[in-house]
Length: 377
Image (cartoon, rainbow, N blue to C red; front, top):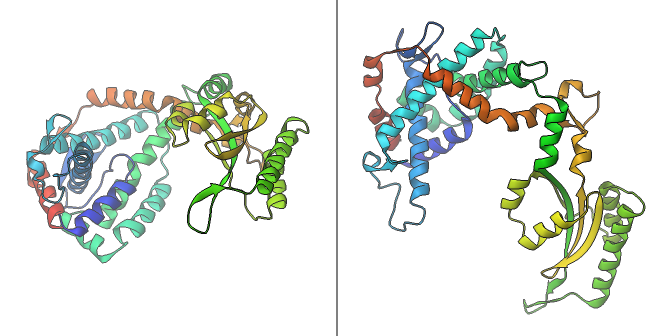
């Protein structure tokens, strides 16, 4: 694969979050899959084969990450396997699945009488076109060679995501047929999230010979005293981390504080790059309390916010007051809770979908063709 192929692959994988869209441009009247509601044009099928090719290459690279003799530039993808399946067959199946996923969502949106904002779709599509398709002459030339016009590309990277989001809001959004109560979402947040804040201060420095040595005693004593002061500001004076930040800047004569704060799923917290010792200290800390501790030659000021208190701030964005910014968006959390359920629903509907296949089109614009063009760049 030439360099341009690698560049385009990276761009495509970054730009496209899910599937493709209908209406691309390889000759008038040419389609690949269709229902009585919508059709997937030849251009969309081509784009899907190329996108699926990129995904296959990534999976093959990941599978060979520990193989020093593997060179993605030299591999023959037709001889590779992806998820125990011949790579070409895997690419075909994935491209087809993307096409049918869109047709399924198109049907569900129509069945539920969801109003579609084509202007919004076009605005999003144009943004992607300007940044990726027209981002360089090489990119434009490549997609034209592949057989995907800028109109096709724009629709391919925008339509599915928009329809998916509108379907989700129809089902799970405010007043949706499967909308969740505040209590359900608050319970989920309280049980699954952690909120923490910490400031580290290294008790080591480097001497003139480049050796790691302890900081001087006066600096260490002053830093510990400051950190204990911050702890008391939280625990005794009921101050906030914003107050700690301002005090830190004054105490250390700096313009910014080297603090870290996150509200995240406990599962992601457990997988994070924080040291095990720091993770334990954060977990062991009491809610709405601050602590000062030394871990591996680093002094830490730690504050753990109550997720139960945070859960009370969950609301739909449309219910937020003007200027209100400290709420937690309910729809984002519901999406986290119900995305898998929606995907399963779409998959079930997809299996029952009645569609037609244009074998001549799919044969003319085969997976092998997309692979060849990708290799040529």
